[in-house]
Length: 64
Image 1 (cartoon, one colour):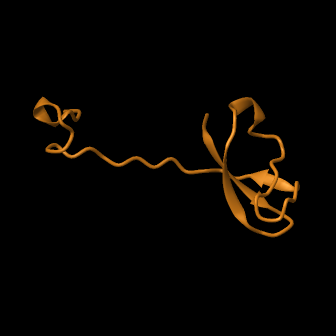
Image 2 (cartoon, helix red, strand yellow):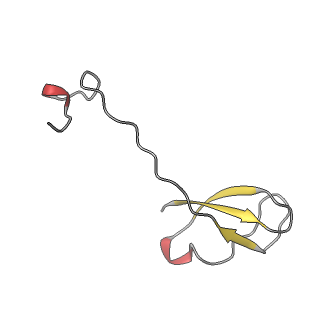
């Protein structure tokens, strides 16, 4: 299941929650205040580029 980020409109805190894709857009309960007025945030995808010496594959495993 994917990890989603949410913002609580009651206490203003952000939190993460592992939620099924089918449940991701539903209101989640804030773990800090118990509030149910939450919104899903747009998360950025981050990937670490593989270096040619650390990929563990012949030739570095990178694309050429």
